[in-house]
Length: 433
Image (cartoon, rainbow, N blue to C red; front, top):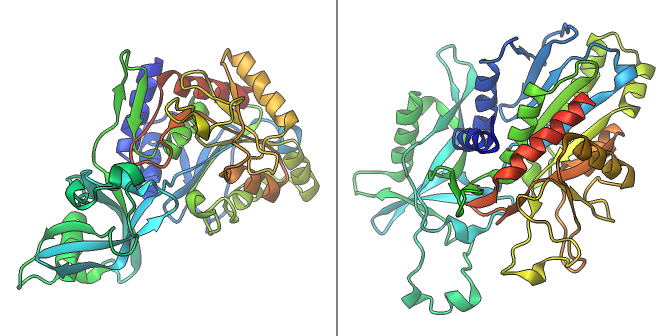
């Protein structure tokens, strides 16, 4: 595929995946079209693996680890791992969400991670996530749900009532000013019952059987190309579904079969990764350990395999925005459409160090891909990634990289068309090395 075709494929991937639970379903749907087939492994069952076999494991519906079993023993090759995350910052619906007053039904929300809240105003919003319910066998089950139509809105306050907004910025009180307008209420209509009826209508599950939910607010506007030459693209959740998509494309299309290649895509990165399915949990160590057990790799050889392993932690990077020059280190301006970014932080908020950076540079040069290096301003707090967490947990060498993007954590983010192709190419080179 050309660079623009790859980005259109990415936009379709994002638009089909408005929540972490949908990300995993979208990936599973793509795997189902592949030849040879991919096999889903159950964590409660014994695993039998074959050299060259293609497998994946899902934990709690929103984290997934995919791997292609190498032809050579693990102790000889180690694991080649790319890690990314399936979640994005935003708003999540509260358990007792629906309330009615002043002739309107509103849904209460809680802030998830660190979104730019002002970007949620005056947008065509809707809901996506999963519900948990009792099935016909009286067992607890779950299923994804998605409302395609614009369902919700957060109308801005008119400038006549907020005269300083252009000088001071839009500030939203999280408890009282974020509830989303859903419907006009009537005296006969109780808001909780109305919301339950909506869930029933969308899922096909009787309202009394729906016990709980995880529902994210998303923007219904589709992704799009922009710029004089359509050299940029915009969508929600580029951080970090663009990295998930790049990793998946590299895994599906990489050459070389000697080493075991792994893509680990985690939920909960935006809130610290501390969960059973986050990067700070046991999911990836469990999967790698079970690969070793299923291939009769003893404890010492497994330790040898980890010592030979490498992980690329892929998460988007801050592109230079010339309207705000004081937000950047003058010596580390990374530019959209100029290649993947190596992210460096002396306090190890990123896992990159000189050797792993040199290795990544070498893979870029082999792939014919330009690269850049980013360091945050010293007087601004620096974000972090799954890289240091996973590298420390497994004891493996790692690097943090990402494609440059604008407006990270906005509901509408932007990036460069060329960079997505560049990232896939260097990831493929890494898997084949």
